[in-house]
Length: 159
Ligand SMILES: [Zn+2]
Image: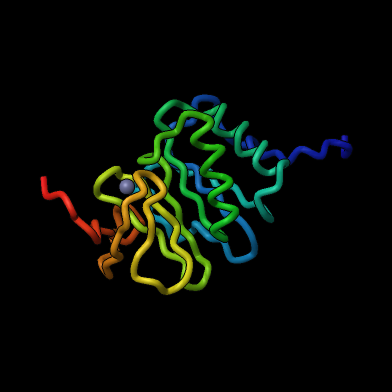
């Protein structure tokens, strides 16, 4: 039975898996160093975010327990595509961790809407993809959120 082209992404995955799914994309995408806090983990490795790999990811998420966590590593474009699939599968932003590894790419956490935005290049400001405010980027990296903390660069209305 070698005609099956679907990667067996769900192989070894128990139905109702409850833990951390670590999906990495590309030759450098690597979630191995991610600390799952002692929770069981299921590793996936894809060349890139092709329709096939995204379908495999979707099936894994579909077989997992509600509340499963997802860690994505790799080029920003790939992990953004995968994050969109995760959102489509009902995962909350807080359940998905993005580990961008492109040179200069950083993940910025918005304290206002709790969305993470991938920032390319070496700028000091980025528009939050969640609430569209301009975030100033700090050098403070939160290991818990795997993101740099941002703050509102233009707090025009103090609340
Ligand atoms: Zn925001």
